[in-house]
Amino acid sequence: MNKLDNKGMTSILVLVFMTVILLLGISTVIASLSNQKLANKKETWQVEYYELETLVQRQLVQVDETLKDLSINPSFANDFIRLYPDAYEEKERLIYEFQVENDDSNRGISVMLSIPLEINARYEILAYYEFSAPFEYNQKSKFEDPF
Image 1 (cartoon, rainbow, N blue to C red):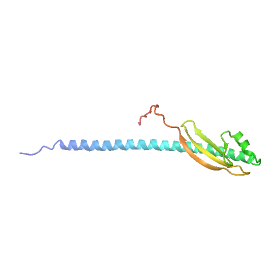
Image 2 (image 1 turned 180 degrees about the horizontal axis):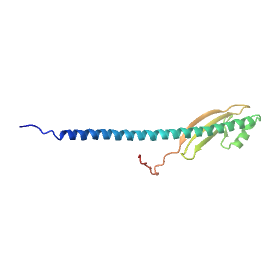
Image 3 (image 1 turned 135 degrees about the horizontal axis):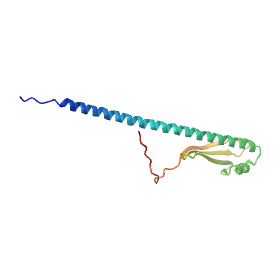
Image 4 (image 1 turned 180 degrees about the vertical axis):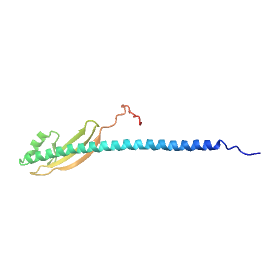
């Protein structure tokens, strides 16, 4: 009687199978939580971007109105520079750069305009880019509990 005893083999296979199913379930939950966090962060970034974009548009409207008021004067460049101290004259045009920032996230949008020194001239957008504050390595990372 050289018969193998397989009585405990089924229990071991069931335990291995349950362990594999449990690990798959846990990895699915972790992936799902990660995906949710990423989606929330993307939504926050989009809301911030559109808020910043609104501020940029308001500033451009203000520049438009200022140019309408000043452009009837042939020497409007000096008046514009007086109203917008960051503006400067360069090769028969004014250069004006401004930034709008979100204080909470240290992100913002920078815009550079070129304004010809002609009566009723429209500005040209030379640069338009989004920026964020550089990461400082001395700040400690805050890890959140995923559950």
